[in-house]
Length: 220
Ligand SMILES: Nc1ncnc2c1ncn2[C@@H]1O[C@H](COP(=O)(O)OP(=O)(O)OP(=O)(O)O)[C@@H](O)[C@H]1O
Ligand SMILES: [Mg+2]
View 1 (cartoon, rainbow, N blue to C red):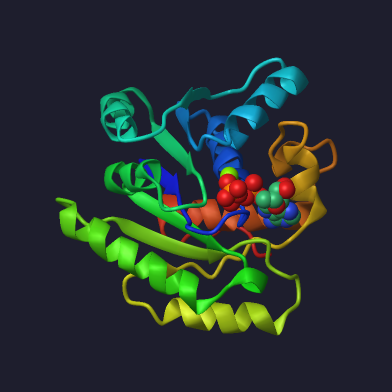
View 2: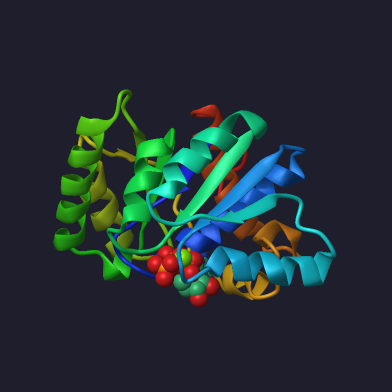
């Protein structure tokens, strides 16, 4: 499956979730390609730190930006079990190429920085992408960097659920130090020496749903 992390707002957790998903799939024995489609190269930096920390990465990393991304991902698709694409937080050629080539798009929304302007722009972009695709793109939204207890989460979840173009997944990823601390040394949250089990449950619920449908294994 080709899974792309997209947003037109920066800093919402795309790279954190894309690298975590790649490491998680690799830990399950899957052959994974991680595509860094952002010229900020966050996923590449993560992978370099990972190599230093672990001596290996467990997945293959490539950098691809611009319109090329589409053709190259199409060519690589038969060679991997899964391809994860990390994109930058703007409406760029790479972002559009990823949305066209992917099977699934995952769009994180950080509740505190949520605004209607963002969602309206996302819907406009999605409508445009869907109109040029031969098969519809499955689009999942989820809360990212969410407050552990906050009314904001509920309001944003309700707003996201109201758009028929998007499938809101009720598996929020909370704002937890464990995510940033592990990412800083190239590890995914489940790979820490003493993993934050709540953080691990959150990513497993989300990823299991994306891969297998409604079969979350653990409750957060
Ligand atoms: N769930 C989380 N809990 C705590 N910190 C997080 C979480 N997700 C991301 N962060 C931190 O927030 C910052 C932005 O995250 P990240 O780089 O993943 O966002 P992004 O959407 O890829 O940003 P950009 O649009 O610039 O590519 C990073 O410092 C990261 O460590
Ligand atoms: Mg990023």
